[in-house]
Length: 163
Ligand code: FES
Image 1 (cartoon, helix red, strand yellow):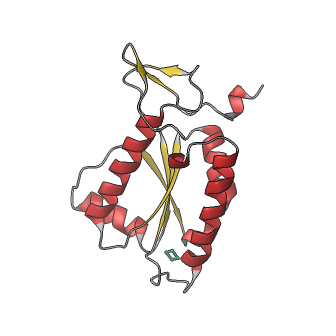
Image 2: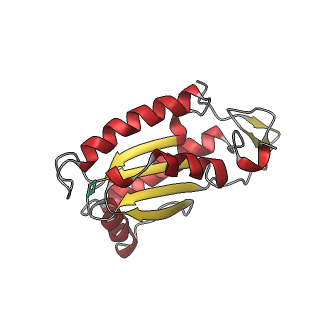
């Protein structure tokens, strides 16, 4: 699928739906679903270390990445989000022993499904960030934000557009 920024006279064009044009100062909304024990603590460390990262992310805390029901991702994309980041403990570090292994398998399937129905693969991203990796969390958020900015606004399958 196409991954380059499209711009027409300073405006941003949606990759999935080229008929949708947003103003040049458009900012994506990214839903960040983070496991409580590692990634959420990592994001907290980013804040307490005063490391800068894009303000586009809206964080939801879950007990473990395995708690992330694919429905959370689909619902986010259908309503407000232009992209979703799911982040958990590194493989082998899950506080519920194997939760992130289950999550990893589930994410592969949900990513394929979303791609099949027409979402760009970069709309939903996954990462492993530990509680001690505040700077890494900032880098991940920066990368996801940059990727979503390149894709433009998400209008496909938004509830208000399906009338
Ligand atoms: Fe963090 Fe399971 S507790 S991924």
